[in-house]
Length: 80
Length: 415
Image (cartoon, rainbow over all chains, first blue to last red):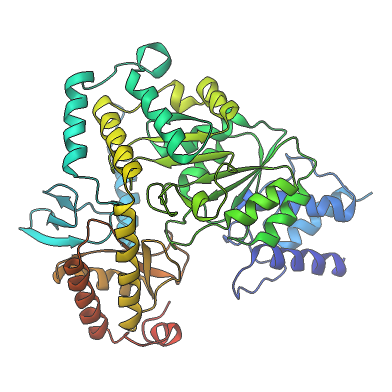
């Protein structure tokens, strides 16, 4: 679980953070303006490829992607 | 009447909040034609003041050019005032198609379709040519009109970091399973004045079989050796699949825009683009004016050459004064002040000195990147630019930012 948290956090930092913004596991990503809702598709595809899952579009909501902890919870719903 | 006191109160409260947040936009009334020298009433009711305009998109100084005005008058006389119809019913005149053909030749593309504005062109083009099986990959700093167009399209959307070609390539690989991939960028970015790396983007698009879309609104008419745009500057004429541009900036400054590019894509817009199908196109006098603009620019590069020289003079002048500007070589020259209030105060002081330039701050630009965006024109003479430089030096001295680093300015005024 901790590994997954770190992996997702590191991806978010690499993909979206372009200044010295500090990201924690509960930092609001979309509502906090760090991740543009347009750019969520990369994150979704990253998660699907990394964890060999398929996240339905109706589950990939801005709310479900709004922090690293929420993303981890979402991914765990689909890991068999 | 459904507009109750409660409803009115709700909107009043929102507008008050906008004012309190310092985000309220106020118009300044110009009593003269658009030019380097203008007469401005600001604030509303104040006496009219003569100022030098250094913030318009009148890059080529053609907005009030006598030949363009004369051509628009002639167009009004010969083709009337309005069309009272959309294009495909009875709203297309010979001069509409004439202008489309002239734009095609000027930009070096295959075909062109006019839109009421470039905002409309960008709003309509993606939905017309892409489906849910496709992906749009856009630079993170593209213009708001492109963002709106993307929102209206069912294709998947992803972004890449501003002008980061490595990141773009990652995204092209990520979405390689899509039916079509379209890379989307501005030619010249309106807030920073930098130019897209179109040569590298063309190479990537060829490698990954992707379409390339460029909005050249801040480039058409003056970027590139003969003013064709960023594709000329980057040596990729004929390799851009879709170019959108406006007639509301360098190309006369009135209104209207277009989609120009591969003939099948243009034809898709003619069949499916909603702003084209459900709105009148550009009015006849404006069409006649733009035709004259293209004739002027096709006959001589004098105006874009003068703009280039003016831009060099202006950029060097600001740097020599010890001010911080965004690097680049386009006529969009942002003076970086970083602090929102400082940008507003600086703009007001410039106005008192007879210089009209506007401060931009969050959310128009990122937090901590407040600036005065200056825009140079071929309509500026040396005396305009020298007077403006004097004013920038004077106000810069007053706020003690001449020769100061970014950190020193931030330490003093905050982000």
